[in-house]
Image (cartoon, rainbow, N blue to C red):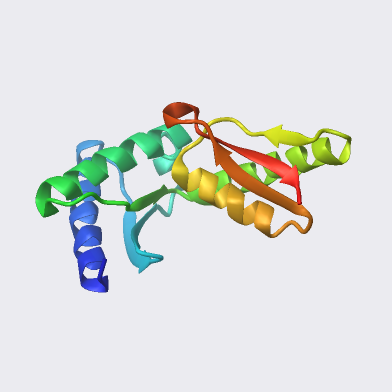
Length: 155
């Protein structure tokens, strides 16, 4: 996608999220970015408690899917936008890093491989990046559909 297309996606998504926040009577500032072939939306608030309910991982994922559908409805094409609410992505990345660290510890303890739980393609990509930064280990995705997960092994 071109930068213009990603910016348009971001604008459409921001309008959708802004309307959603208004309906929920929540305050939030929306930042739009385009990188790695995706539009990124970040919703922040000066009062962190303001977005606490929306920043739960399941809620962020559900709202992200709804926002993608809203963008697709306006543009006619599938959207891969990423939504972050109240720093939820940073928190999830830290959780995934801890999950990878525990998996590597199991391998160092004698396991031949460590299966992680099923997760979204975006989260699996983050896991692959974390593992790639850990010398001596590799990862690959396994399974289909909702059961798709990451398997870590020694390199």
